[in-house]
Each structure stands twice: as structure tokens, then as C-alpha cells.
Length: 375
Image (tube, rainbow, N blue to C red; front, side, top):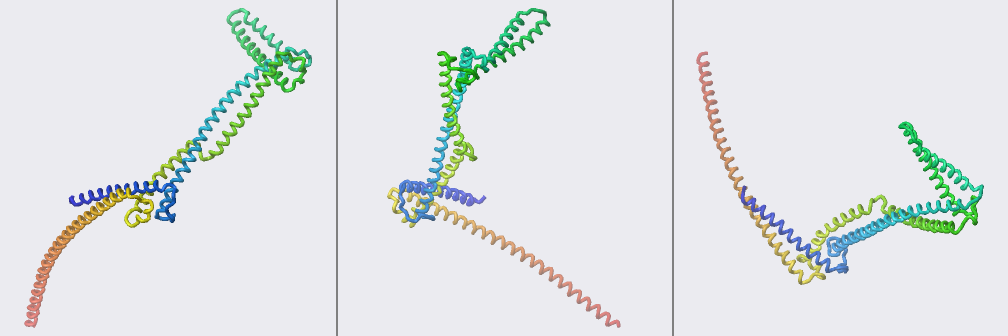
């Protein structure tokens, strides 16, 4: 391969590197100038590739980032708040469950105490209690009898089945009895004068149980209000997030947007820095300082090197073109020589053909003469 082609490639690579280095200088200068301007407005025109126009583009990018970062902070706060809500709701629901269980037990204690003090034969709860107590007593007696009964293997199998049935019925009736006590306690707290209850049935211990139940009821009511508010706030936050997805997903999208916008700053820095070059530098004179000359001198040096390398490349290309033209001339000369040789051969062939024609014509004349002489 022609070494000059390799030289051109090396020079082109060097030129690319020098252009990039020069652009970085102007990017650096542009960034310095933007930071020097700050929040000021030193330029009147605010459009196009003018100092004011590029400054407006720069501030638009800054605004986009600031707005996105503000939204991210809001979403992060929402995430923290949502977590707090979930924890508060979980804690309060757990507390609610424990209080409800405790209140059920107190209702049961209250109902049992009230029924033990009741002597009203028309008391519905008292009648239900009596019926269940009789069944429970019968089932307990039956269980004692079954468990004490002896017999063979078949008898034992039958006894086991009867014991299982009796225990199930016993548990069921005991559970029903607890429900009656609980219902009686709740009913009394709702309306102490209903279902045969009277103030005389409430002794000191029963009154204390009733008071505890009322305290727990108020606590549960307060908890219910708190839970409703917390769940309402959680629901509202869910409505705010809406179809755009979870806060984490929105934050990820905004962070990608910020990265994209930040990627546009170097081009804006470069556009602004380039305005400081040559005669156009007058436009930036209000903000340029003597210390910027170092960057401008380096940039000018790179510009001269790039121009020199470009000239060298053009000279090498010209030399290669000259050689190519010479080669083309030599090739053409050879083609001409070949064509001339072909022409000479063709002329010789034509002369031979013409000689044959002349000989044929002479022979014809001899033959014609022979015919005339012998007529």
C-alpha cells in the first residue's frame, strides 16, 4: 500500500483528536462563562445562535432539570409518607384486632355476670343460658360415662366414635353459651333496660366490667376514625399516582430524563464558548476576562495545527493525484501505441487486398482479349 495513504489516515486521525481537544477547550470556556453570568441577563437578544439565545437554551435545560429534581423530591417524600401510612395502618389494625378480642372477652364476662344476677323468668338470654347449661351438663356426664366404660376392641371403637361426637357437641354448646354471654353484654351496653335487665342487676363488679367495656369501645371508635383517615390518605395518594405507575417507576423515568438533559449541556457549552473566537468574541466582551486568554490561545494553537495538517493532507493528495495522472498518461500512450500497431497491420492487410484486386482485374482483361481474338 502507498505509504502516503497511511500518512493521510494518520493525519486525519490526528486532526480528529485535535478538533476534539479544541472543542473541549471551548466547552470548558463556555461552562466557565455560564457560571460567571449566574442569574444575570447581560444580553438583550434572546434567540438564535446569539449569546442571549444560547443563554436562554442553557437556562431552559437548567429549568428542566430543576423541575424534574423537584418532582423526584416530592415523590420520594410521598414514598416515605406512604410507608409511614402502611406501618401506621398495620399497627393500628393489629391494635384494633387485640382490642376487639379483649372487648369480646369483656362482653362475655359482663353477660355472664349479668345473667348470674338475673332472676327474671322471662329473660330471653337467661332462658337460652339455662337450656345450654343443661345440654352441657348432660354431655359432660355422658363423656364421663363413656370414658369409664370398658369392653373389647369393637366396643372400644364404638366408644371412641361416641366420645368424639359428644366432645364436638360439647364444644359447640360451650361456644354457643359464650356467644349468649357476649350478646347479653353487648345488648346491656346498648340499652341497659332491655331484655329484662335492670339497674338492680348491676353490682359493683359488674359495673366495673361494663365501664371497662365502654372504655374499650371508645378506644375502638377512636381507632376506627384514625384508620379511616389513614386509609383515606393512602387511597388519595394512590389516586395521585394514577395510571403513571408506582412512584419508584416515575422516579426512574425522571432520572433518565435528567441524564438525557445533562447530556445536552456540552453542546451548549461549545456553542457559547465558540462565540469567544475571533471577531465574534466582541459579543462576549462584557463577560470575558484576561484569564480566558490562556484557553483562547490554546484553541488558536490547535486551530493552526489543524490547518497545517489539513494543508499537508491536501498536498499529499495533490501529489498522489499527480502520480495518478502520470500513470494515466503512460497508460494512454501505451494504448495509442497498440492502436497504431493495429493500424499499420490493417494498412498492410488492405494493401495486400488491393494487390489481389489488381491481379484479378489484369486476369479479367487477358481473358476478355482472348475471347475477342477468337470470335
